[in-house]
Image (cartoon, rainbow, N blue to C red; front, side, top):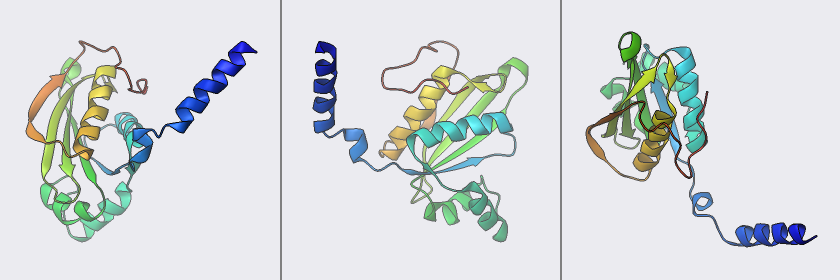
Length: 172
């Protein structure tokens, strides 16, 4: 009985206070994978983005780019087509060989197409390490909030794969 009352009191206390994350509307995110991104990694990135925002249809964006004869991950396409569709545009490309595979991610402002942030993530095969997943989400939140540092951010590697407070568990 005591535990039930304690649990009820805790739920009531947390339910009465407005949560700051709930007060904000989730950003509309357009995810543009370059042709080099493997399907498994693409699904992982889409799932991560869906936890922090509302995904905009890439297929509609790609059709609009094709109608204008623009390459979807190119800057002209982002500025002409992507800016009318999303708050944040995330462009990802995949490269490297064997143990030196990397995921390069560019974050663009959805209203202007301006580059807001760029980061390279060291991969384990085609899997995104937990530290990189957290950095990926953190960058999305920063850019959606208006933060910008278009300089190259350091690569996120194997060190520090432990999760951070407030971040979801890694996606497999």
